[in-house]
Image (cartoon, rainbow, N blue to C red):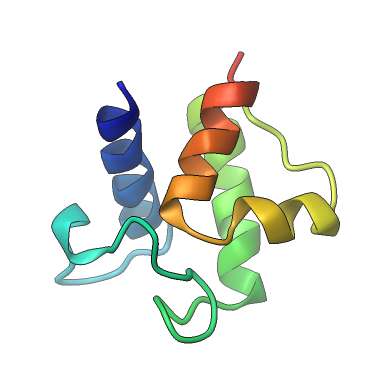
Amino acid sequence: MQEELINQVKQLIIDSLRIEGMNPDDIETDAPLFGEGLGLDSIDALQLVVAMEKDFGVIVPDAATGTVVFQSVRSMSRYIAENRK
């Protein structure tokens, strides 16, 4: 179940950020999403918040929560699993 959700999250990142030429296997599950890892920025974070709400019914209520949620694909998956409707 966890692996399936991790792959769904990777696909969500690729689709919502329109990353060309990347597939889920190219994204490391535990790599940082911001900075050195994928190198995402605050606009990317907003797009991911919207996509998570639309696809999983999960709300990221504030920036402090977002900082924890968007550390890695694994942290996103864990948050979705715990808060999905």
